[in-house]
Length: 202
Image 1 (cartoon, rainbow, N blue to C red):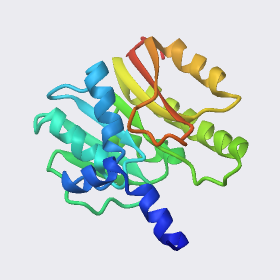
Image 2: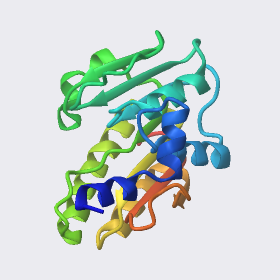
Image 3: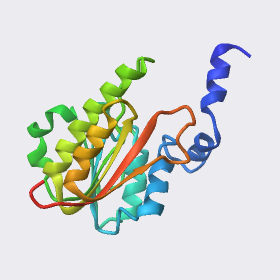
């Protein structure tokens, strides 16, 4: 077996095949599905903001959960090319420039989701630092865009600054959990912070 075939078989696991069968563009949808089943974060009629939304699996799943009386907004540097329901709006832009288009997105969301990940280098320390940078930007957006009582889900690569970031999130929310989905790849350093009950003043 050549190297490219080995790589293909490595990534073509049960969840990848299931995503293809269920017409989701990526296997990452099952991570959010696990969190939804455990924490019941998203309800019918909710307004959801999805940071790092490309290729669109979370958008499609969330759109099902909210129903057409809800609204889902997604932001990513990369364009989303899949067909999306009418109650989903995509913004192609940089999360670090959120203020430039925040007015059109709004600040009345029930849940902010971030599945953002940096371009990895293979250096765990560098990758964790880049992940932290994205997480800090996601938290800043959540503080601006979430309604009081709202929820925040954020993926982070575990590194030496994890606890400090986790504590900064904990300050802003009533409850705070660390979650490792079963559908995450075994070699992955990713974990999710699931925080609910955004406090007034944050």
